[in-house]
Length: 117
Image (cartoon, rainbow, N blue to C red; front, side):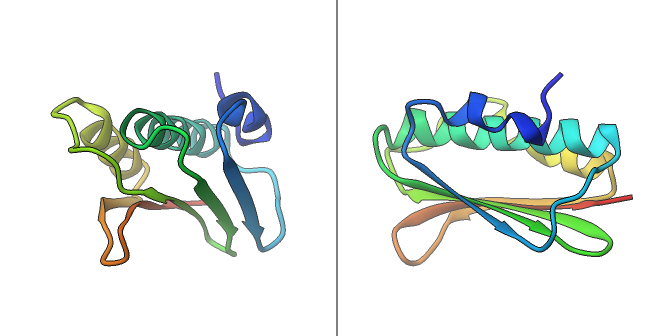
């Protein structure tokens, strides 16, 4: 099962800038695994739709929640796969939220908030 401390496994060979906000701390296993899977899917989508383009991954450790934000250059049209709905479901099962879509600056943003306890 994936964990956030294994992010390097996901970004190997992809131009990803990782930004950590707040103080990293252990998360409940289900939150950690869900966050990892959301990041995994978001990076896979970035690689598929905008190959070789830079990606910024921000992990925001807040007192009661973990924020995830993956931003990449908007690429080709989004497919009709299960990636985005699956990420939304994963966040919702924990009581969190997830939004995804094009931003006005030509990027595509996946942003999630998960409870950290």
